[in-house]
Amino acid sequence: MKPAEKNPEIFVLDNGLAVILENLPGRMSVAMGLWLPVGSRNEIKKQSGYAHFTEHMLFKGTGKRSYLDISREVDKRGGNINASTSKEVTNYYIHISSRYIQESLDVLSDMFFSSVFDAKEFETEKKVILEEIKMTEDTPDDFIFDLFFADYYGDTPMGRSIGGTIKGISRTSRDDLYDFYCRYYDTRGAVLSMAGSLWNSDSEKKDLIKSIEKLFGDERERCGDKYPPETQVVQEKSGQIVAFAHEKDLEQLHFVWALPGLPLSASGDEFMKVFTHYMGGSMSSRLVQKLREENGLCYSVGAFHSQSLDDGIWGVYVGTSAKNFPFSMELLTEEMDRILSSKEREASMEESISGIAGNFALSMESSYRVASFNAKNYLFFGKTFSLREIVSRLEMQNPEEIIRKVRDLWKDKNYHLTSLGNYSQKKISGLRKKYTISL
Image (tube, rainbow, N blue to C red):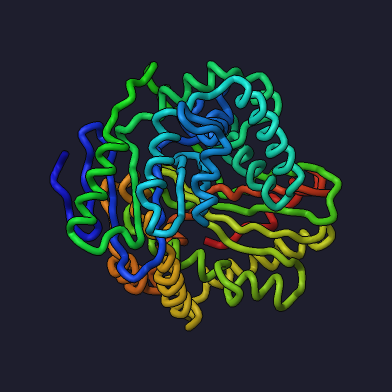
């Protein structure tokens, strides 16, 4: 085992598993989880949905616990156990009273190392996932993002739905899924992150580390090599709108309007965090005020900055009526134009700088948020960052520089527009030239 670092404690087990421990005295609980560098992006086309399906199967039984035993171990102690799959990361976590650290670690270790993928449970869970896919497709404010990423990235792992398709999941076999699990669920590259009331003395700390070494020190041999990720679609530069309309009989029209963002690998992305918060990250943000509060065009409106290791997307989501769609687009782009072309920066952008810094600080009151923040930074960057460091970077942002950098980032780039609802491709194609911004 390599020597530990301080604040938080970081060490790497002999099997390659990184362990991050952040003791937060005064808390009553602990959040712990495994973060794995595997997601839907790692799937070849015939495996679409496998990462998400594998996540489900780790809750369906091990050599010594049934699926009911796994949930009961946590439920009877008042804790929460859950998991998530994204395009690049899968996470399993438990949030529980600090009295039950050992028991919870044992559950996580058992799930990770000893899941059996029972054939009967596999078939049952397949039905659950098929219903989950149908539920997403019946939830337009979720489904619009699946459609948008498919339009933006095309038929690539980044463009395919994390959950997979009904056809693909229906024909998935237990052996194929277990092969995926064996290929990608190894300890090298994974992170065990814990935050909360971990110890009250040096002896308790030593006992915790010994337990981690015992429970997570094994190294499972992979059954095959990992597949190399498919090459991502390169977006052409034209300064035009690439528009897609997905017709469906809905009460509202849901749409995403987007431009390129920054990848996680880019340094200095704080300006984009501030700009996103300023334009659509709070009730006082510019687009919420313009579309919702001043004109009553929508209930839901917000900006987002979706980042992967080598790409990023900045966009706005709006749910409005089909008849108000053109006006909503007009106000959206007019407001973007006004902000990006004005020579006088508004005081409200200074408020966004302090606002997002404050939001980040508040979020770190959550033990799970601390554990997740540490784990993801280690996965992507090989190190962790302190709260003070992140807040300092945000507070150093200058409104003039933020606008300049955003303009430079978007110059001559494509605009992407995806809609879901009662709007035809012919009608949405008519927006190509009208709804762009001046850069």
